[in-house]
Length: 303
Image 1 (tube, rainbow, N blue to C red):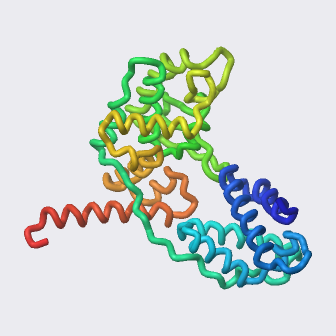
Image 2: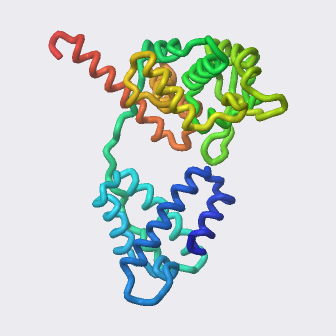
Image 3: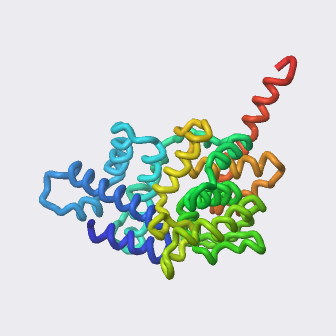
């Protein structure tokens, strides 16, 4: 990685507290840009870092256009432009670049895709499809109940420690994006399921003095995000729900949508989900509006 990009990523890690996943995505995007700039500006013997520092607006625009021409989604192109804007703002503030080549560049237009959600009945079927016959089943049932009860991201779920869950008061403490802590209440169904798991399932899965993670594998170590995906997919298959649209994030989307449908205000749902910008939460209002429109079309005699 080039020194100027390394310095910027270090700045993001320390000053901005971005997650490791975000840092890795930015690192990939910026490394690809460095290669693109070097290939585009080749003809001189200058190193790649000089290409990045001397790149003009047409080079950045070409990189974003190439992303879309190569089959990349507008969201990917927009993320790359965001990474470059941050990089050049950093380089400009340190006098390494005179003019910011990302200024006046517009982000690619993105088509708003409404998240797919499960109905309340489908959520019931999904959770009920997991049996209590063994420690892993008890764990999986508790995990699904907790995801739907709290709207946690899968990364937040696998990061939970035993002491992060207060079952007497009925809340869970999680660390979200940007290492921001939030407290989320959970309902009785999730409390009962997690209590059952702690009393039976986890005791058999966790090794003595081992990992303090709440949800552990049969080896006693913290579950990975990939493992949670497989568990949700397996439950969806058992419940007869389309596995292609069912993921841990589907439960998060369903949590938010069902909260709004039952009268929760948007600001409260934003807090529960840990969204920094309420505009991110507003996508769920489009879902509830779409459902109202569908109900109207089906039920009104002149619709």
